Image 1 (cartoon, one colour):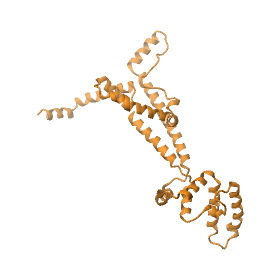
Image 2 (tube, helix red, strand yellow):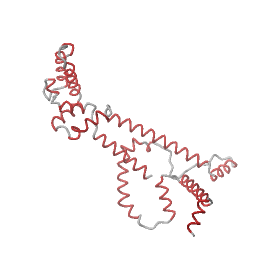
Image 3 (cartoon, helix red, strand yellow):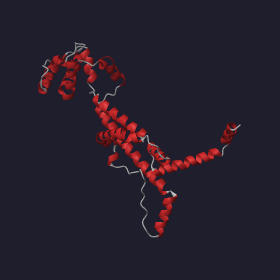
Image 4 (cartoon, helix red, strand yellow):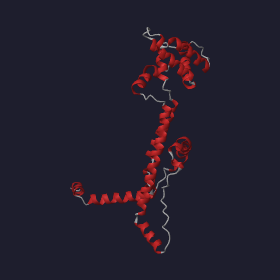
Length: 275
């Protein structure tokens, strides 16, 4: 259970950091052009407070002048037109324009100037990171739910094969009653509360508060002496097992131990120990 919580917290922190650092696919193209001294506003011959309508109007006007078909003798015509189109695309979108204006006002961050753009070119995914993260969260939610459902069904099947349940089932069938209700401590059927996407954005803040409460209030009682039953129960919870799974685990462990005690390896160990 502790391991699952650590994995969950790590995923949450990863998503939060990535969302906070989310950049548009055009971000490093802007940085490259800024480093070259290219100013999109000057390229379009407009002011920085120009409206979207003015931007598109300026692009239509200049595209007629700089279109490669009209400048076949200019070897840089294609490159000039690409920059012109890029400037219009970035400044016409409110999100990318805000990114570009921020770079012009505050400058290019040191990391993005010397390393980020190269990492993006050679290893980065050419998609909006926000869309990638949204897909990742949905995928994790689906896989986690299916795993929990499969685990629930497996434990139910295991419990129905136990001698205690079969005995109770036979008694109730002999009396003409319905099958006995199966209640397993520590096991709940996956529901809406177990969905990762809800745990991430709704239940996680409450988990943090609960963790703080546990650390500051409850943990002070851990120093008290505990019985073997309490220690075993803590061990079961830390392993993330239901009562039935833990009993089955103990049974298999005992069987392995008995088998080991009757092995030649164990006998050789005893002989070497008591020489």
